[in-house]
Image (cartoon, rainbow, N blue to C red; front, top):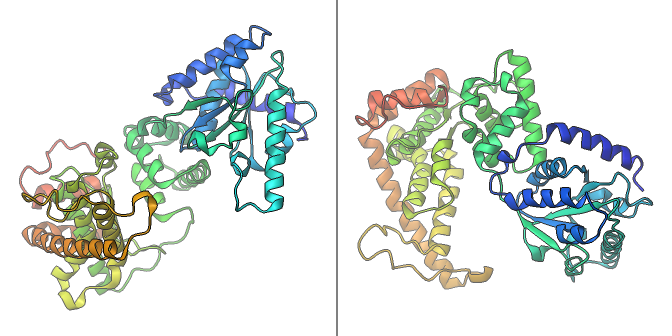
Length: 473
């Protein structure tokens, strides 16, 4: 039995009743909101039927497990119930506690793990026995539900079939609610609130969508997000100023470890790095017709890289999840641009090994497109769009030798062609490439507005309108 269960439930509830996020932070989840209302109504009666309909044990269907606790706190507040998050290691003790109604009325979120899975041939005897024991205890706890003192069990899963079949039946987990992950803007508002709006500059508070996109891309779960927030609070305290959006980008780039700035590379290496990163930035802007102005370009060295360019988060939000051939081709061109810039600036024999990761990612991107998406090299030409429609690896089957050879040939030819296109693009915009290189050598860090100014001065006329709203405005 978990000591102090009732006190824990009461303490948690007090916090959530006062601080649960508004439903506006969870758009697209009216079904979950209605479930909260159903439980609120069920509390007004001691009958069992309203609870049978509301669900004594519920599964939230989502790939974003970190979303569940925040949403359930809102549900508990609306329903007039207490909330407790039961860590995975505590699930067995929690469901087997001597007083199953402790803290009722309550919602208990059981973190998913091995106990949620069905039988597997890979389980040894001890694992199978422990799993069956926990599942049996959960089923017994749900069966002992008391309408006068309700404790609702909730867990999460990516798919209904992810939950063991013996826990998926009437009287156990028998209600399934599909949860929509919050839009990036809603997540950004939450992050800003957690940092403290008064601690954030307008470059942060005016772009919640970009803040949400950054956290979605860089921090996959609550643990990582909490570490990032703590890192940002320390940064604010040390800097003695409001947090700028570029600070968020820098923390995302450099990670949680704090360190002194590494010594600069020798001047020749530093110049080559600057031209490499300038190549990425220029092709990002030119190839997107000015829509992708990178958030920042940097040659500040870290333990992971000598330089980096971060795509416009606004551009990524507007692009969505759909990937067209043109999108894939532009991504590959950006990846190839660093090496092409080095060749242009220093000659083919002086190209460095700094493009290894770029080339790896370009190869993967093209390989996916030609293996699984039915794309073909140069499919913008008449007759090419239907030349590669037989996809490989169906149902995760291994590639045959002929499939591997076919895809490899397409990838190699595609990268060769696109590398030539990128070099031509950089030759055509050599003034801009040199201007970005020189600015990076001077300042080491170039933000979005600074890059936009260089494009206005040295790029194609009208590519970036004078009224561009940047992350710094």
